Amino acid sequence: KGTVFDFKFDHQSFSHLHLGLLGEFQVENACLALSALCFLSSRDQFTLDQSVIRNCLRTARIAGRMERQKVGAKIVIIDGAHNQQKMKALGRSLRTIFPQQKFSFLVSFKQGKDYRKMLEEIFPLAEDITLTSIFKDQPQFRFLSQPLPEVMTYLRQQSPCPFAVEENSRRALGKALAKTKNVLVI
Image (cartoon, rainbow, N blue to C red; front, side):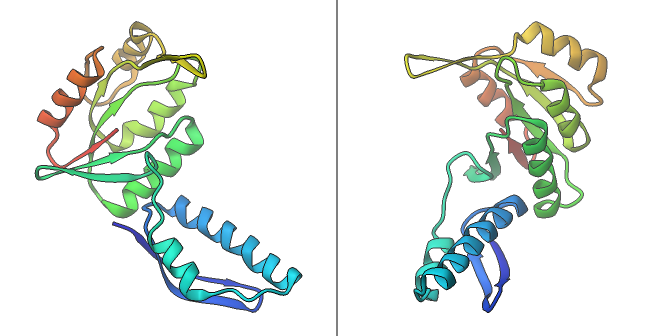
């Protein structure tokens, strides 16, 4: 449900910090933010309130970034990994939190993204994959899925695990949850 870490920068140190986010990449991000805060505190001569920092980190939540949900007895991890680097970080975090476990994946890829490289990061972790499509059409926010037949062709050639395709994302979620044994990664 979170991550615990120690932090030291220059003459500032914090032990046993509770971060309300999962994933080692979230710890890296928190350390970067804390480093900047410590630097500014030293440069601009203000005192850091450890209780405020601890509370902010403990209550931190970012929707869609290693977001953990419970659906019945199953765990659902939602992450917006959108390139190979982010997918690799997601994979490292999943292996740390759930060692030796395989996962069901529900995936869709934004058109123009390198879905092949992202799938290469998923394959070693996947028990099965459900492929679906996304579509968002609003004036300020428009994107389409990578065409499903193209991704299906790649999966047929490369996937070491079973996969299913359901174009309707709501039905895809229901089907993926139904076949998930323990953890579904979206």
